[in-house]
Image (cartoon, rainbow, N blue to C red):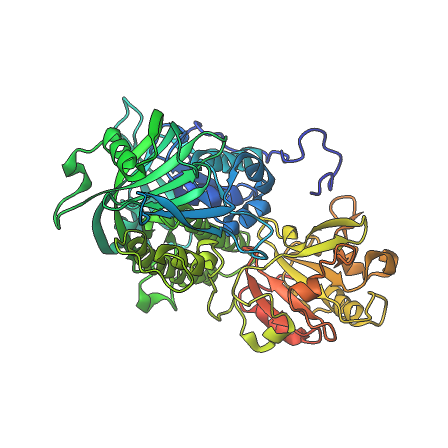
Length: 635
């Protein structure tokens, strides 16, 4: 963590200096904003936390509820989301508060006993990530995003008691083309409306999204016509795996999922209830918490379940739905119009909670969108960059909906077909699907942002289009062991990692030094071409290098000046750009990530932690062309 760049600042370094004239929640609503976010759920808050860091972007976040969430809804955090939390700076806090899911167990009827453990598997395979799979109350995730927002320069907070009811887009207006009608939900003000004009509107307002309806969108898909109950409970039981993630299949009462929750005592149960008729809705049955408890008790027999307190409960019907497009631009106008209204989270995809992906994919949507909006609104990129949001995230959501459709049927299947490996079908499918449930199978197709795999062989463990798989390194200046991926913060900057060839120690005349000299000084360099006058050299592209030698074999003083930049108001030296392999612990990033030792390479990592391109160290024109495809020339 770096601070004091522009002068000594006492106190909490996470609290950034406030921007002048920042608006406070509750102040009179502005007439115009740059971005209006509808909905303060995971998607809306993830986006707001990114925008809040940029003082020149005026953001309004509206939420129909009258205050922040306290309990209920989602709880599973995939390893991919944990990597994202690290970029926001609260990954370690989540690690401390959450319950880690290390093993998953499977229970089914035995030949002589009603219920027995039939399988257990490791929940996250070794080498998948430096982060675990965890469970934590969605409300705490909200709290952490809200903290990031409150501590950001804009001191952004949600305006509660407001919801979007309609919007109109003027495609010919150059500024503030979206007129949004907001309705008050505060008691005594219901029905009162006001209008605001915005440059961009992001609909994070759930499955019944008013924003989606306003742009003519609809969710398409099917329902499984099956009711499930979910409840968070404090209970006493003799079920042995109460603190394990467990799938329990009874003989004739259905399926139960046990999910331990943070704090050591709370547990969430997902309980299969009744099948519904073709035209029947969950509400028609009039079921409640006691029905969920009674069904859970029957499924767990012969084990006892004595529920002492129900903290939260809900009954839902499984559905798998996806909208046609995540923005407002018709297909025949993509070449002439940039998006002004975009959808995220449940507003554009819904599915069952059994795979634990809903909150994770929703946050992934706006983590993808946030840096693109920032790049456009700060003048770094053309508005056409925003087309890539729908292209990339709809494909990701389509994969999720298709996966969840199949997985929900596996979980609810009555017959268990054991194979020669001795695992029941649900356990076999669970193991097969682990990369997906970890959130690591998303791979963006080749585009301006995702290069062709021409040089993939130079870094076989960093798949182009997939998230950058971190690995341990040693920081040269202070010999600190750390993870290289933790350099990628949620600050809308690209990272250019230079992996040095064998024998290169950063000295003048070597491959790394020659590349860095070109990057720093040549007018054709993307580092030079895409920063505005007066900006630091790493304002858009943050260049870092990793060497193969141990840190005692390298001399920091001979490193290229691009890797020792002087930045900020005082021109202070940034000492955190140079790394080497962690040979002491035997965790060699070159071996772990398949880096070509003889040739080395460049790895471009996008602001959302996905690998954008891999190139040889000599491919300067290709590197410049990659960035020129979507960033403006400003140097």
